[in-house]
Image 1: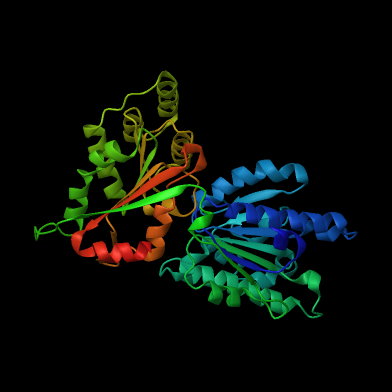
Image 2: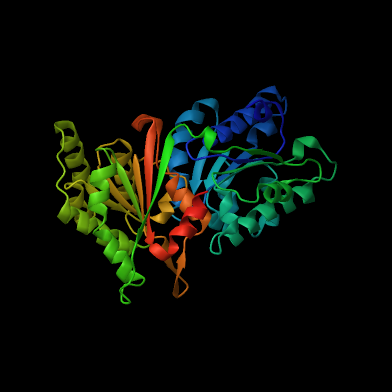
Length: 399
């Protein structure tokens, strides 16, 4: 995009999953690299880039990807998340690209004035999944850390020097109030630019199906209904997966484990020789014994309670297309690149603060957006399971 490569203005982009939003970040990084090459001031080459994502898994994925791409260009990258050591901002001094979560960056920068010269070196701030500003749990922290960076900008910009401006790039597949976010990210020197793209930019046609089930049994509320839906999964996988990878989203770790257990009991997958060899090799690597056993049946589960090494192993096995079914908590929908031909959202309710609540429009669209990648063909399917009384509400969220 010419705008990214020819200006240093901030940018907010809303575009469907799989349409290339990560590429926008990479172009912004390359733009900054070009300014380093053109600068005679060696200090400019110590400038820093912060990439912020809501979950550790997404930071790790981008770290592995960008370390390979940018190390040869002189960029030194570091991942700083809850799995990382260090709680002092000084940890970033020898690195150009910092990949972190809002919570970790908040902890590092609360006393930024103690390291003002270091924080002033940040010239590019990349915000992934910016729609999470609307979430009760993660939204306030994201708002705080970005507002803090704006405060730093206003504090150091004594001379209105264009070279001291910080550039914000914020992206998401679901931004209902993109104009408000752009206004928020604007600096007094420069307004943030908006780019909004619809479903026409999605590279793979996505079919959305809502399956509503009766809840006449008074006992079938919350957990009971979630358990009931486990026994609908086999039929849906057989009917819609076409033998390609299926990703199932559940509202909790317990729901994930229960669904995976039911599928292992109900489905017997037929593997190719190559598939069997890769599944067995992955199973030998896994530390979680229950997960090891399930993987050999063609089903795996994924949640934050797993060891990091087990999570990475499962992600790679599914990404390569060898694992038929992956059952995961809904947090995996936040941008982690695990392409699936079929996505099933098992129930549209989750347990929050002592009660059951419907997923927000953004949460549903994020999970639906995991379906469909060009390597699996030109079409994909997302199936949403819900109570019949909620069907109309869910359909409206998909419009």
